[in-house]
Length: 258
Image (cartoon, rainbow, N blue to C red):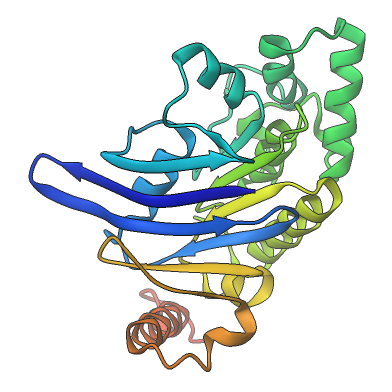
């Protein structure tokens, strides 16, 4: 479990996060939603230590990450897995080598053990046959699955995902959502996902934090989203759905309306 207490972050004279307190629970998919510029990415960067909060606490199962020494933070990060928006795979490494990378860096396993663990992770995301391919030889959706396999290679307690469906078609996005959801429950991880995708919100939003102008505006589950009396949340959902409809209705020159 990750607890955030009175977290604030400022850049010069601009307050980006304003006194956020919330809890991200184990074994479920915790989603952070909000408009662009609302502070979602800054919040996640504070959670993983890429930014230092101006004030407040980030507690990992009671351990205050903010006050840890540099060496303690390095050890703590070994309990974290990360999935970046663009997958962030190494183009010069095969799929198998990409998944092995964190094992090579941080584990004490033998080469054979690392290879077996990486193969097991690829099997978990249904990519066993892609192990010898390079990232440039596989689709964007497959790259995201490789990124998931790499993120779980060290069996993390905490999994962070920054816009994992970015650039993917709706069908592939559903595959990624279901994969993240099932892995979270299987390994009982604390999974935190930054997303704009309302399909993700409604499909796997077991705990949803809505941020507005750097503040915690609303928190609940997917079943409560559509019936919320919070006008700012309603406006955000409506705007997101309208934008999705506009994108689906867009017809390029010479194209055919679906």
